[in-house]
Amino acid sequence: MNPKKYLSKYQGRRTHPVIWCAAIICAVLAVAVIIAGIVVCVGYIIIHPRIPFISVLSATLDAFQYDEAGLLVAQMTMDIRATNDNGKARASFQDTSMLLVFGGTEVAQLVAPPFEVERNGTSDLHYVVESRQIPLNREQMELMRLSLRWDEVGFDLRGKFRAQWRVGLLSSFKFWCYLKCRLRFHLNGTFTNTDRCSSRAQ
Image 1 (cartoon, rainbow, N blue to C red):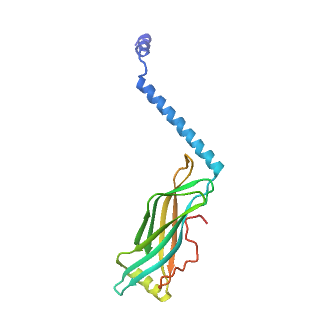
Image 2: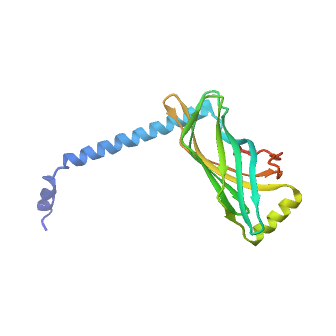
Image 3: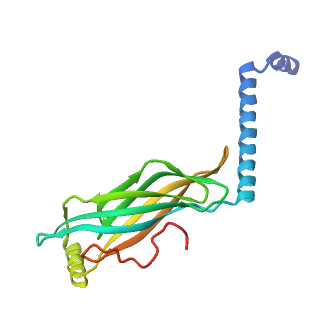
């Protein structure tokens, strides 16, 4: 092939304007993402907000029924407190969901719509939890027998939520937080927990 003919074949071609526009848009988006990342990092370094958290404020076992057939019915009143101890940033809580579990079996699910907590503020979530009639297996029945003997019954609380802090128009990336603890009650309904039930890192 003649090299001159080969070169002249491609010299006449020009990049289509649509391709140029797409390249410019991609470049602008890349620069915008880099700038946004720098702004968030600088804002975090300057403000250094603490992670918001949720904790069990109070709980009462209002009803507790268990029969010889191994059927359990429980009703509980629970107050969960969302805390934002940042003095410079608001905090938003999203996808808040908690499971109340007895002996590995789900008793009830607790959810909350998205909400915000102001700087150095708190917001309380009130739940009235009533379980369906739950059949217990042999291990759970043995656990219940011991609970009746010791006059103390325990439920596991497992929760998670997505948190995000905001300063004006500046907001952080969302991050998951988790809560896992055991709620203990006397059979008369009294909450006996002495340890802290919170998603905050110890």
